[in-house]
Image (cartoon, one colour):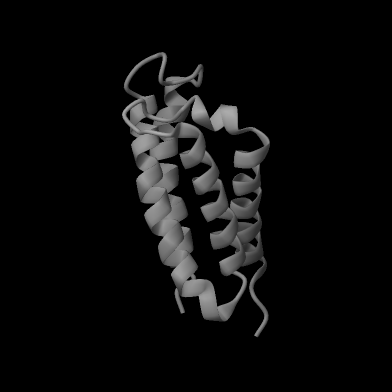
Length: 118
């Protein structure tokens, strides 16, 4: 059975986002909560996770594991979103309304991933 186009879109989105962790790591390190250690390693690790999970969506045998991985990853990323709301410096120049809008967006992305559970 062929995958729907929107599953390919989701896969591409995570693969692209993961690659960007390697292309522009400083951009991601700027938004890492201060209380987390080894910012660069965590940025690269999360990028690798996004790439692998995005690829995993494309195969029936790995799709469910990737979906659960994406949901857990997005829940963990909520820590970054809330941290960015904690101060002007943590916001890294992003407007407050965008930071607030990202929180429900994370929940929509989690729902979107869970939609594909087999």
